[in-house]
Length: 172
Image (cartoon, rainbow, N blue to C red):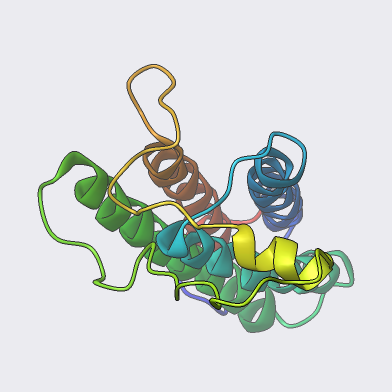
């Protein structure tokens, strides 16, 4: 199958599934942060980037598929979404390895400058300075044996499979 083969319902459904799946995945991470109170580490924040890029990209793929744009545009966008999710799986796998102690993480993960010696005014900026990001080496929690990073690997691989199926499968 080539990127220039005609597109159809398969590509529309794949793009729709990707927009929703990516938005739900990153929305869940944001929910754990802002509602659940989990403070993300440097590697956690980095794992969100493929989703922040992917959601609008897959919205373009959905628009392209719906409006019957040239097949190479729709299929190319879906393939790019698949590559983004493979990168997301790599980031999650790297972070999981750091959490399990299989390899070293970045040396600046969890590093915070010491607060100033003088007393603050008790304002919002002082509260921000009081927040200490967690270390990348400790999982905030585990569900069924996997940390958030581990679940991101699974989500990213599933989304990559959907994207590549939409990019390279024959249209229905």
